[in-house]
Length: 235
Image 1 (tube, one colour):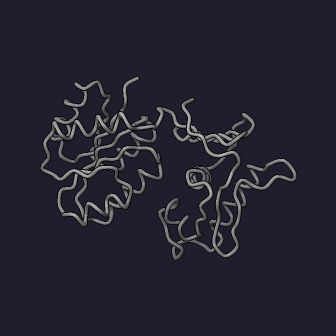
Image 2 (cartoon, rainbow, N blue to C red):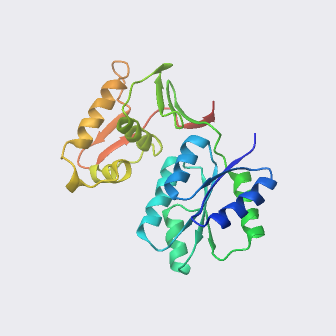
Image 3 (cartoon, rainbow, N blue to C red):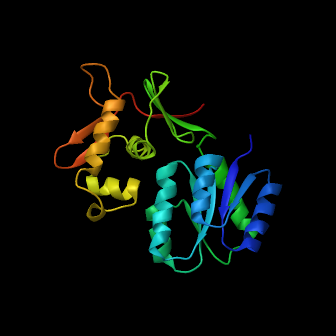
């Protein structure tokens, strides 16, 4: 099966030119004019490589990079930097970019970088996180426990996905609000995260005597620490 590449460029001519070159290299290409559209391509189209052109150093740029990385940790992300120097490139890498290419770029070099990213990408076309008897289908937005679908709301799934993609790490209420809700503590009730965690624990209840999938670290926040370790597989 061909690797899928998403191209998010607001310049339609440049986007079409790059798509034509990549298609000739036996890559399946999804075109998008915005970062939001390419996020959909990653989530629903199975893209394993993204080329995104953003007007740096706009703060929204780094938020978008982080959003790609949270969605699929093994995604290969190439950023086309329209402006900025070394410091901007370092901020892109810190936010989660795998490669940064200054624009104007040489299309043959850029396509070679895309091919290299496609070869290295470990992301399957349908990524599924498996933890013993628990499965998270990242594209279908489904959670299965003992083979049965757990009915979660979209916010509950997004919260659980975020914690499951970072097992063993503890996140505060403010960090969760920012990463999952795109919000802040000032804009939400004090109990917002607590209530969603409580509902998740109820729906993902384990056998008596076993610890909850989501643990509370007093004074610090919440974390997901399953046994055995995470697997990322293709279903």
